[in-house]
Length: 265
Image (cartoon, rainbow, N blue to C red; front, side, top):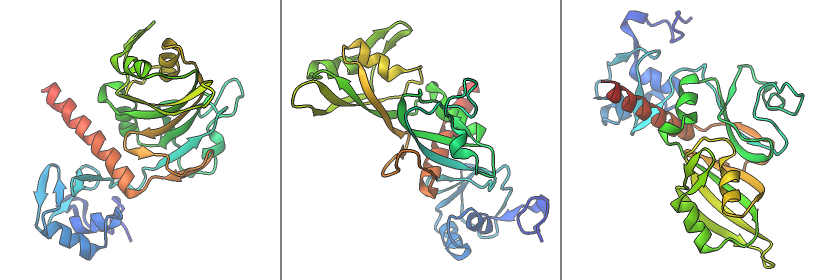
């Protein structure tokens, strides 16, 4: 029988034993979690904990193992979707176009998309019910990078690649790629494959950048979002994030929150 905290009936004022929390979060078995604690690999609210008797409040305390944040809230869900072309990045499209509900209808929890991909852009989209994480990942000021593969018209020269890195002027201000390179040139020079990495969240930014340098996009895929990468996930498929992927995202989110608190003070 569990108490109101859902952590096995241990009194809320005293908290829950740290090794039990780690085991419940899927970090490791309770015995292995105890070993992590003794070895000084576990941090609670910025403090290294080495005592096995330490109790914490899973609802408010922040835990990390080996420098990677751990999600203690079992109600939070995180999914990676390889969004196909023609699907709108919305949970309900007022115009009746195909939207994300075709992928989320069977989920028990209500999730929402982090950021957007325009209907004609395919690739990695994060879905979650974690509003705090979503805010950090979607806000351009936190600098979460995204990598795109674009098929464009024409032969992209080294000079064009350098121009993308140096920056181009758009109607809503200048923008430059964090990284840019040509992946492949077609033999007839009709098309090129270009990889761009940037952290801007501006609308249709990759398409507009490539238009500005004279190479309109034919096809566009987002391959990565922060530490997440599509890998072999096929178009239209969705999966939950792994513990490692989730830990990497939470680590970014907590670092951003800590930086924001320092700025506020």
